[in-house]
Length: 333
Image (cartoon, rainbow, N blue to C red; front, side, top):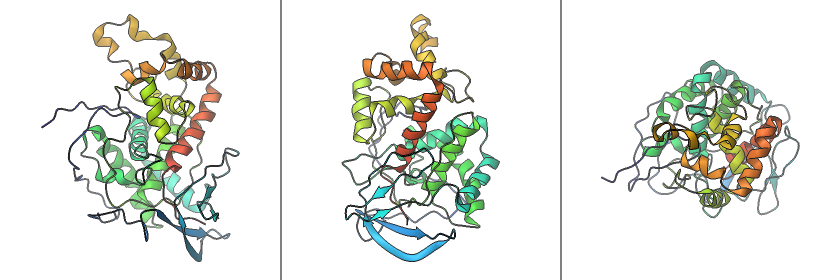
């Protein structure tokens, strides 16, 4: 059996496997049955199903198919991203602020604590981080429920059980996908720890099988490799640096492990690992974290975020929205 190194990073993975493990995660919420062939998301793997919310808070009866091609339109922070199909039929996901969104938030707030925030946020990155623009798979699709036995996902069973407690309560009133539940959970974890408020659109469909392996960034990558990896996911260098700031949560040595702030960037600039013993150095961040500060393009963003927490919060909000939207298949307007 090949040896693996387990990484508990939010963004990166050091483990790989030659087989597709089956998770033995048990939950009360209804999980879609696995498929032995392709993801069961509609008439073809390149289609998405859209259910139209009506103006009175319910859902209209008109349903239609549209292709998966998505166009993210940057707008005001509290406006929804607009998705456009290849046949020019514009659709939107259910808006934050609806009764469904508030119900999900209320139940998550009952179970997500500051001590659990880093694990919940890591769940988001490991579910959504499998997306690549040139592939028809991956993204924020709830497939993490089938991938818990992968070495890179070690420790995520506990985080998923936290989310499942809230999901079971929501499902009793209104069915919600794992993808939506996890996406909102990560945003709530950030807010709970003092970070920005992140509106999350609803309407994602769940996958019925695991995503392909080996799609998460490797912690051994240098800055150039990280930028290329994120580019394949439709994310810029700025997005890479902003999302890396999530490492301020957890036990990697970037400030208070339960406070979401810009300490990550300040500590990166100080490079404390250079003055630490070999043992202590390994306790401060990951090789991928240290690689960022050695890259001129990344360093510009690191410096800006270290000096301006509000800018970091704004850019993290935008990057998080991209992360949980890109690659998702939608039930929508």
